Amino acid sequence: MAEKIYSTELIGDVRIFADGNVWPPYSAFYLAKETFPVVKKILEKKGNLLCCDIGTGSGVLSILGGKYFPDSHWVVTDLNPQAVFTAENNWKINGLPDDRLTSLVADGISDDLVGLARENGGFNFLIANLPQQPLVDGEELESLRQVSASAWNVDATRDPDGLGLFIRVVERLPDVMTSGGMAVLSASSKQNESRWRNFLNRLIDEGKLNQWEVISNEQFPLPESYDPRFIKHWLSLSEKDGVLRLKLGEDGKYYYTHYNLLLSF
Image (cartoon, rainbow, N blue to C red; front, top):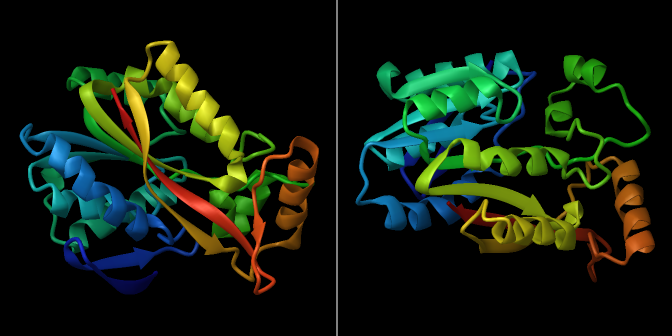
């Protein structure tokens, strides 16, 4: 495993060992920077926070949270067993005590995670930086995961917008959150913004969510390394339903909008 040292505005340096088959923490630092101060302001009087990082990857969000919220215990989960091992290791090398971390191999919000949360009164804070890429051309995802860490950023539900895992996780959040708890998730214009907004509003109407808001949003260019099939897929969907997923900039590059969301229970 190769080590990288990241300097953050939140807590200073973080040491991360990134395994070759574990999705690296590309957007995690931006997500934490934009959302942790907001969450801390709301929950700072509670103390002894029980927190959860779903899809932990290299564990960077739980490490940032463990340092930024000193009275917090973190439950980290990932479908990839190697990611869970990597997160545990990174937690230790960043000087965080073992008794403040619980790890679990789980797909989204599993029954095991629900049981753990209920035994401990529910999560005060949950963060999930979930896969957003859709499957295109019918790839065999399990085979891809054996050879490429990027396959762990693919939504395995075969939802055309790459929104399936987001929906599954958010629908089960009431099963694991405590009253007054906060959840932070990221979403993208690539995932059909009107669709995920309507979904969150429906949960409010059904009494499963108190409120939600966009904490921050920013436009980013698609990396040049992106497979052209993804661009073709998103443009084709937009042509069919009229929902803008990508914006063509004056520089000839395609841009998308990244959203950081705060959900209140």
